[in-house]
Length: 362
Ligand code: NAD
Image 1 (cartoon, helix red, strand yellow):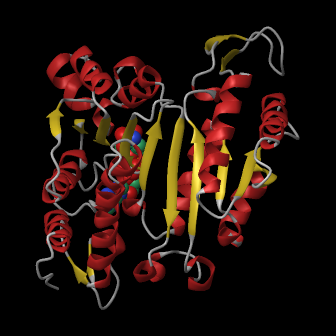
Image 2 (cartoon, helix red, strand yellow):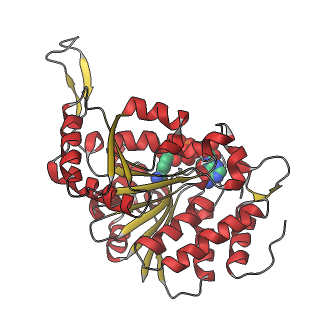
């Protein structure tokens, strides 16, 4: 089992270090190789995704990714910005299916901005299409408008597009995932306004014929955004396009209390995957040792389950995280009165201790 470890920038290095300690505590044999990515790679090699890093990622069974980005790179040409590394990895590895579970841990019910009764027991899965839509559609650019409201004015444009196979495969991923859960899928679109999403809705409906055991409903994205804060537990699996999924999954993240708790997996058709926390590089807290490593540790658990066929080891990590939360330890982002505030390293220590069944302090 070969894992490419790409810590990246900001808190990326701190949180990935803890995930690696947790993986080491499992006593499984992995081959792990680390490479630079994002701003760190730009500083060393002049590119956020150097050839050697991409090669390592392609050859590995799975990629454990931290986060990339820093405000100081905002003035670089777009292709050289750290965030291009993650887009390049998604594209080159064909990572079209992004899984983002939003689970509200019992102990963190109070950390959510929603009322406890709305989110206690929340367990939803957002499946976001990751390599198409307006984020990748060509053409895009700037030009002088020849029509529209202001002909002759400078304008910018992007292209929203989906092909039939792209929608079919993500719909199948969602129906298959729903089979292992409560057999309900909500497909989120904007079919009332956008041709691309009427097409999306038609194809999801067609594919659904192969999954008669799954209940399917369709919802417009504006309504879905509202329902996620009004009655999030009504959802089980949500499947949607790249842009809507980007926005809704961050909204869902906040339901759980902190973005620092949310893992994610991005898979291709051969189950090779990239695993990363849903948050960014958090430059505001980088280097302070206070970042929550749990989203990355839980991403490592997803990696074991989805790409490395080690479901039992994944269960051990997830149980250890629950155990640590139950013991009252909290990083600053999830801290509340009556719990014990700890740093990144201590949180990692506690998860390792729970895995190896040593006493947990605090
Ligand atoms: P962010 O997710 O980095 O931070 C948002 C807020 O959440 C900040 O206040 C931060 O301190 C906090 N936060 C994030 N992760 C945390 C953790 N594990 N523990 C405790 N607090 C945490 O988003 P941002 O500030 O909008 O972006 C910062 C940089 O990250 C930008 O350069 C952005 O482009 C990049 N980014 C990268 C990725 C990625 O690598 N996949 C994703 C999103 C943003």
